[in-house]
Amino acid sequence: MSRTPGATTHGRIVASTFEPAWWLPGPHAQTLWPVLARRKVRTRLRRERLELPDGDFVDLDWAGPDDATVVALFHGLEGNAASAYAAGLLEALARRGRRAVLMHFRGCSGEPNRNPRSYHSGDTGDIAFLIATLARRSAGRPVAAVGYSLGGNALLKYLGERGADAGIAAAVAVSVPFDLLDAATRLERGFSRLYQRRLLAGLKGKVRTRAGVLAGRIDLLRAATASTFREFDDVVTAPLHGFAGADDYYRRSSSRHYLHGISVPTLLLHARDDPFMTPAAIPPASALAPPVELELSAHGGHVGFVTGRIPGYAHYWLESRIPAFLDRFVDKTGVRLDFPAPDARVDSDGEIRV
Figure (cartoon, rainbow, N blue to C red):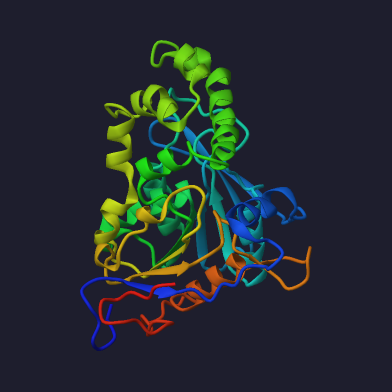
């Protein structure tokens, strides 16, 4: 893959063109509007159960024409195909003639998974198996990928681990918690505690449902009384997935440590006011591999990015920005395109401040 003349040895940070809706000021309004107020997107989906090598399974939801380039989607913590951001992008990609597939992480499709384990921010094994499966089925067509939040962190970690062998032509990651310890700490403060409380309720509910499978592997009482992600990850996520504790899990699973190993064109979409983490978690250009562009906006919240001039009439910017980026590298019939020039001018150290 060739680079443009004068390219640096690292990635670039560019200013986003996103302009938030004036009637949704602040990070929480941007974050909550799609969840609480967006009209449900109704897209025809076809479900497939993908059996995994360890005897477990993940469920896939497909949209779009069967003979088009595949875009794999990876949802955020406790998400699924009905999550507003996922349903919106599935519909947007299908409308543009692409075949989209959302992989539900284990236990997130409405049915408990079989094995005494779950999913987590650094779990790349199932992503690798899905990409390999898609490659076998695609008759040589390239595969693209999009990940949101937790799914974006896992996708970036996968890309960094696999490098040129990732099997993906282009990728987008949105609102990624690049530093998991930073995210866990931020969610213990202020209004963000409400996000933590809601997400923890879902995670703890799954533990209760699977208590018989998990008994003897984790402390069920401590899991039921955990009030922060750090407590939950220490008593549930870490022991179920081979980590020494929450700190070991955060250190080994944070995607920031893997960004330098990415070898495919990758766009990171991020807002400085993301209420799930602090600006300190945002990686500098020097941490990014050359094919990586971090498109940074001052506002947008967490997987929000809602624009629109008329109150109540929202435009979900991600659903146009993500397909536009993928169109730069792979067309809908599977033709891989050359690496184009960047969308924005950058300064000498590869960064633009917004």
